[in-house]
Length: 191
Image 1 (cartoon, rainbow, N blue to C red):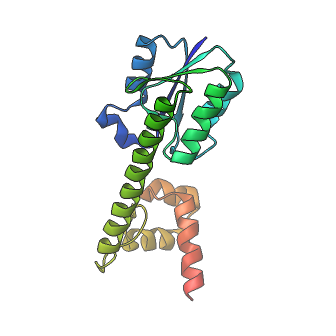
Image 2 (tube, rainbow, N blue to C red):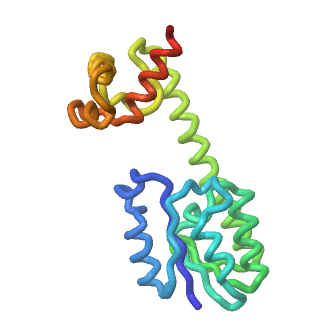
């Protein structure tokens, strides 16, 4: 049996040609009969669909992935996974590299590629942390999602709560019950 595995870790990957749809299309074009897809970071060792695939794949089967970093982003995890599959007589076809086997050359190539994938991920983390530290210098910086409602809108909703139910205030303001409960709790803690 020929299995395919596709993975994205972010929605942003869709614009670099790494979308699940693009990967699945390439896997089918290269003979994959059954495809497993995850939307998880490659740093997570356990991913639901990869785990299902690994439980199902048998000696003599083939696993196809579009790129080595779709399987894992760390040298140790990726190398362990690929080496384990190869030792079980499972053929690995990385579309942008070729077929992986137990030869010394194949081991060298995949270790180099995993090292680059790990390096790339580390650089992304470093740039993200640098960007956050620069952004934190701005007095208006707040980490996390931007607030949907400003203080004035939330305070107005809390005032309306004094004479209306949560459902009524939600219908009037569009502010959810959970947002109002959190704001009420924050206000209570500030006193």
